[in-house]
Image (tube, rainbow, N blue to C red; front, side):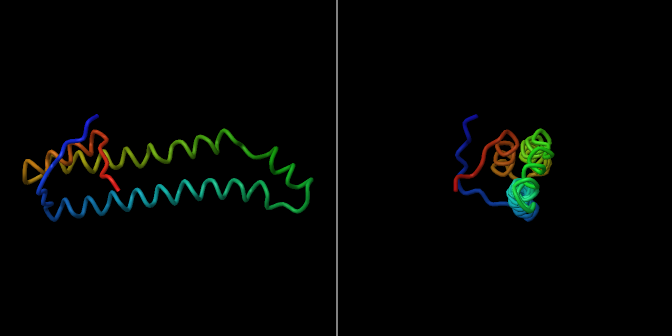
Length: 111
């Protein structure tokens, strides 16, 4: 999707809170993805000696690890869709409505 250019956008107070919440969700998602990875590797290599590490490696459920890592962004994306969809409905101005519709459809601000 091509993201629209929206000039001179001013957010309502509700819109500002929504932006803040979306940023928080993205931070939590990043933390969660890192925690899943670190936790799995700690589980594998935290044992004492080669035999214990080998046991941990064979007992680790890589399918669950992959599923958890894959689902984290989709959960965050669904939450962001919900927030942006509600904001599009409740927006006070057409520019703000256009912004929230774009976020709902997958546009992200450039960093």
